[in-house]
Length: 269
Length: 297
Image 1 (cartoon, rainbow over the protein chains, first blue to last red):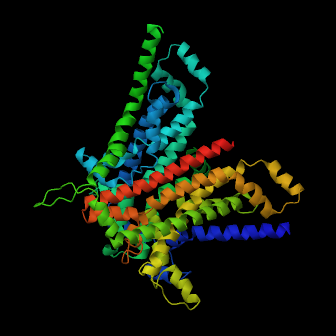
Image 2: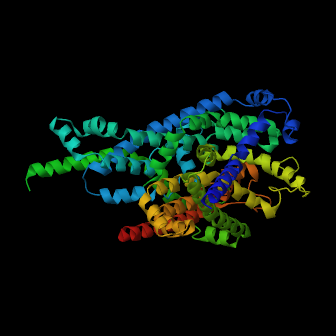
Image 3: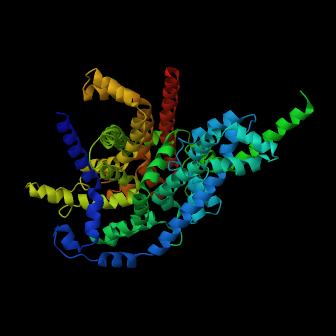
């Protein structure tokens, strides 16, 4: 009986896994075959890399990759800077008005940047950042989520270490840099993974703020490349899609354990 | 109190506010000011060359309420939330229970479930395009094996929204699974052994012990899933563009369309305020439920 349920479990789990992975497998299949071989599922048909060659020539992918890379880096640096300082203030510095401000920050968890596209667009234009990578990244730098995460991390640092550093003559900022930041390394790593994969994949806001190949990230480039008006066929779209998800996907498969742990750490409030 | 202590307190306060200032400035620029500005501009009419903008009070809102498209979009989004939230949570829970059980191929199964999470929604939409394309698509070819006629999944009002829903569930279930998985691993083994000793079946054990212990996680995931049902709309740009005849249009896409395709900022602003209200209610409910939870513990 127990054996039976166990094998039923295995079958159920594996079937679901196959369904879940199928879209990706079909895209890989389509990407390495000619369109007619792909859609007719000729299993023995020869493989080809032509789709990748055509896709690569069809858009400035190199530039898109670079833009996405710069974007996630700029966002991450900005986030580290802003959330470290704010997280430290909320965790370890006593000052009047702190609780009220913290409540305001929590509120931002629900005022999604995605929903405020209209006025954020006006703001970015006002600051002269329209069609710039900084303009894409800036609204995400003061992430309430990140501030919260850093606050939790700094709160768990034993107070003895803080006091010891103070006796040694460290100033407030010195303690932050020499005691708190090094101890919060795992949280930084987790936050970095979540942040990079979020912004690597972000679409709507970059679509609104960018207007040229010079600033466009991969997701926006991919959506333009695949637009039906351009009349590209399924094999080439698949090749372009595989190409643009490959770096993150490979990183995920290699660092799977760390990735999952990062998402977990980031999600537990 | 001595002057020295007072001085020290003031020094601390200044230090605290200095630390907060980058966050405060950025949050004001990109969250608080825009929220207020959106509310403000939702009360004015759309300016034209001949007629400048003027204060119209709630007219933009009454316009929306009188617009049948608005109600279609609201209904779509309610269906979208009403299906994706429970369905992806249910699948996530099943995935977690499986990935946590003693089955073979656990590594493969876990990777497969989680993979969609690291893909951009735009890429996911492209992958699913290959499934949905009429005639050539995978779904139609499978259907043809059973003699079913070709279906234009994305092109007909009856199925377009469902096609969108499936992609969303596929994308977010694996993400939610991770949280269930983490929670499952914190359940003490003795509980399992105790219920085995009592002769409780697997179903009883799951229902009476596992599910109650997962309640906080379930609440957390539910809130995230609800937020996602507002946020996850990128695939509309690739798959349906909200069509055909608004059958798959969702609120955030509608806001984008009003603001950046029709350049109707006042109505987009009014829509934004309505969405923020809904998110506010979700937030309030979460805070209340969390309060309750802490009372239990």
